[in-house]
Length: 234
Image 1 (cartoon, rainbow, N blue to C red):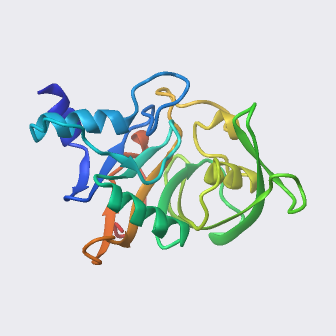
Image 2 (cartoon, rainbow, N blue to C red; image 1 turned 90 degrees about the vertical axis):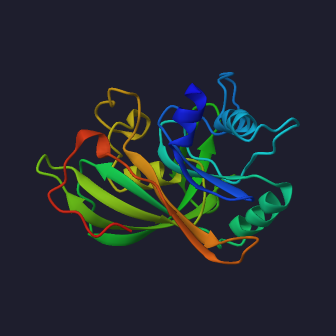
C-alpha cells in the first residue's frame, strides 16, 4: 500500500501505452553502478501490484534525466510504444522544456547556445570543445529568462534541441550561469538535499498510437525560492 500511495501520486499521465512520472532528485531512471533500484523497476512493481498482473510487466525507458535533476520522465508500457517513441526522439519530434535556477543573470534575456561538447567518462562531466575535437557532439538549446526572485535568483526556461550528456548544466555554466547547487559545474555551494535546481518541466509530442498531440507538465516547488514574477504556466 505504501508503494501504491508514493508512486501513484506522482504519475502525471498514463494510458495503455505510456506512463509519465514526476521524478524526484536522487532517484535514478535506469540501473547504474550504485545498485540502487531504478524507477523503471519500481514502476514495474507498482503496475504489477496495482493491476494484479500475474506475469512480467514491461516498462521501457524512453529518455533519462540526471540523478540530481527532477521532473517528467517518460516510460513505455509496450515494446511497440517504446520503438515508436525512440523513433520520435531520433527524429527530434519530441519537445523537452527545462526550468533552471541560476544566481548569475545570463548575458541576454533570451538566446541560443550552440556548442560542441566532449564527455569525460572518468570525471563524469562534459566540457565545451571545438568541432574538431575527438568525440565532440553538436549541442543546441534555446533559453529565456522568465522570472527573478527578491533574493537575486533567476529562472530560465530552456528548450532542449539535442540530448547530450549534462548538456543544460554544461552550456549554462559556460556562459557564466551555473545551476544552483551544481558543484560539478561551478555553483559555489550545494543544495541541502543534494539536488540541483534543474527541472524537466514538460515534454510534448504526438502520441505514437492515438496520433493525438500530448503535452505533459510536471509541477515544481523551486526549493523554497519565491519568484516575484511568474509567467502564465505552460
